[in-house]
Amino acid sequence: MKTNKYNWKSSIISSDNLIKDAIKNLNETNLQIVLVAKKNKLIGTVTDGDVRRALLKGLPLSEKVSKIMKKNSITVGNNTSYRTAKELMRSKSILQIPIVSKDKKILGLHIWNKRISVQKKNNQVIIMAGGFGRRMRYKTSFTPKPMIVLHGKPILEHIINNLKNSGFTNLIITTHYLEHKIIKYFGDGKNFGVNIKYIKEKKPLGTAGSLSKIFPNKSNKIMVTNGDVISNINYSEFLNYHNKNNAAATMAVREIKSKHTFGVVASQGLKITNIEEKPITKTYINAGIYILNKNLIKLVKKNTFLSMTDLFNKIISKKNKAILFPLYESWQDFAKPKDLKVSKRKFKL
Image 1 (tube, helix red, strand yellow):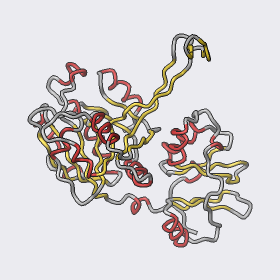
Image 2 (tube, one colour; image 1 turned 90 degrees about the vertical axis):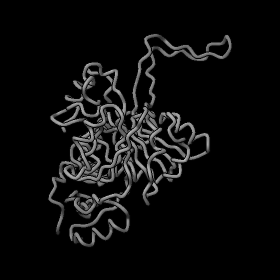
Image 3 (cartoon, one colour; image 1 turned 180 degrees about the horizontal axis):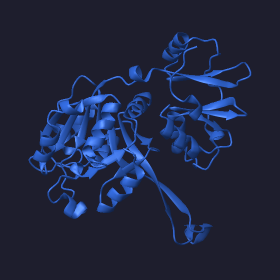
Image 4 (cartoon, helix red, strand yellow; image 1 turned 30 degrees about the vertical axis):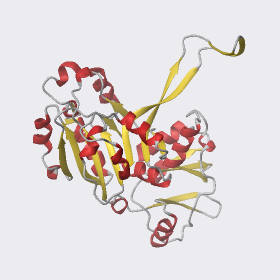
């Protein structure tokens, strides 16, 4: 029996664990699956998609993982060869298959070879790096915000490395403020294992305006990311999610919670219908990472300032399908100097 060389036992959690424990496990093991067990017997699995569906449904992370696990997971027996398991994975479009005994005791985990599974994508990725970064004050007086150093590398280099590790190597960086510093550092991208082209904005065009200047390649999907956000997002999963949902546009979003300092009164006319003491409100914020079908580029007028928010409103007004991709991975934008301190604690880059 040939299994992967990775520590599959680290992917096992108890049925008493919570959704937040499953998220932590997915982030720490990088196996893209959690095996849910009761007395070492498999009772279900949790994948990236299961977690995101739970987030969209509004399930709290304090719920038990059994609420979101897939109970009838595909499994194989101890005598199934890796070659047979791999064919099964290929036919079912999955990357992992648990190995179990007849009584469901967990014996191992077949994993699609990681070197093969991270295939190069021909999708173009547009990195918006032309902003002034005025809210960072003195830190951007002589340095473009995407070039601020975090853990020994510019923010932009961390973004590029993550894209490359997910198979995305066709990059276009939009520049304006102190653009020569970005171009001098990254060049054509060869030293970083990617291909980089540049769009030089003569005037700031916003987070979407420069899309009018790109020449889309044969790929139908274009990824766009701000040059001042770092996330442990799996860009391949992001693209798969967009494709599986037949979306025209997908926006990565982050859930934030805010607690009211007063009791909130609901009413109809003069009549009080409900009173909730200091409720917690959940909302989504734009995380600055997107996927667009390339036909949407025609909605962007040339040399005209346009924010990504306004572009999405245009997309929606034209009855195109625009969807959310809830991020549970670590994420940080860099709006103020304090955000650098937060990121140094949050990310292990």
